[in-house]
Length: 106
Length: 393
Image (cartoon, rainbow over all chains, first blue to last red; front, side):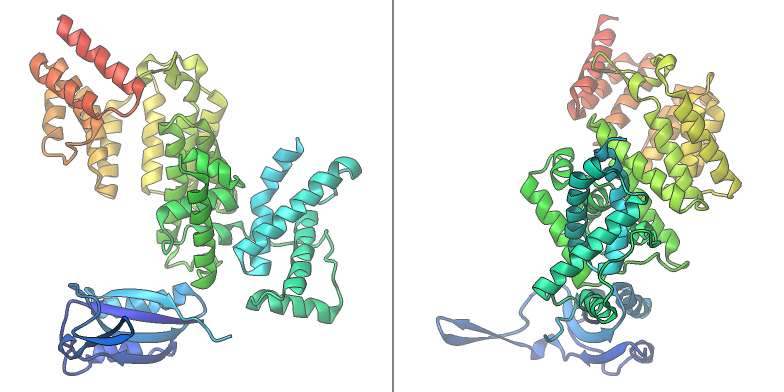
């Protein structure tokens, strides 16, 4: 079963280099893929309004926590996914992580 | 035993095994309900089968497989199960087959911290306790629709997020067990506070089941002991609709047999070298029943409990015990600075201490504040009575 870990942090800008401790967590065999996102200033939000495309400069949700990246893991159950979350928060205690099961095709 | 009681006894056991077999609570529940309906129709006529549990599980399982075949439900585990069975050509599972007891797996799934607490409580009462959605809704004073949605949402989350149907590994067990015990104790206290006795009885049933399933977990035994000790005084606690303080209770109304059970559990929990918060609470509850009360010991145990839990309410209780050992002035000092300004018992306790110190005006203020915060009529009458007595002096 696949889970998406959506990682939120207070940082509007990513660290320039991937922290080796985070890299070690991402080495875990259950991690399928991962993506780090560029800073908020680079975000564009797109909506449709009355059939017309409307672009906004900035992230969709304006809050104190920003989506910084996402990790897809393959785990037997929720506890398996939560174990990766725990490893991640050992390194970055302040990030908030939303765990969402991935809708499998079919 | 009346057939309804047999069903209540069997429900959790049957459902748990079905969840293990079918991999989905909703599916298991529907199948179990069908099997119980067949039993209700057949058993009175044909007599109870030799192995009622096995019969119910086998019948429910066969019904579920029929249904899966009809609906071709796309649930991995059930598909696989259907396939295995059609390949073997063995449709009817023998009712004498030994089905594993998976109630523990079920309770840990229902009390998984990824579910909201109110959902954990409702689901535990539904799946293990065998209460109907309507009964649970009534017990928690919420509309049927709300409770029904809450249960459905929880069952689907367990399925969709693959919340494990398993007993947690050793390193996670203490934390996860705490969550289970918290749910049971919450159900028990709900039964007390609102005067709805049924929930207290439900919590004790759950506690007994857990104690049978985890006989070596001291906190499980201790929680059951704690609930039994509280419940044993049920009939003495209220007289003519009025709350009766422990010292004024008619001891002949206490359930001695139940207290004996509780003490044996407590002894076993101690023998297992338990030192968790439920054990300390049960030990305190037991000390409270002795005559005269050993206040020094009680105050000391409240001190232990306060360190374990960091709870200001425990500090409040410690102060009450301290008043008996070191006098009301020492107790009043212990209350100072507790963050309980909106807690009714904080003010009623202060009021009582102030009254004993002869500070009547301060006592009246504190009783007045407690009265403002009182939640039941019986509390209000009690506090108003105290206030009246002070005015007459």
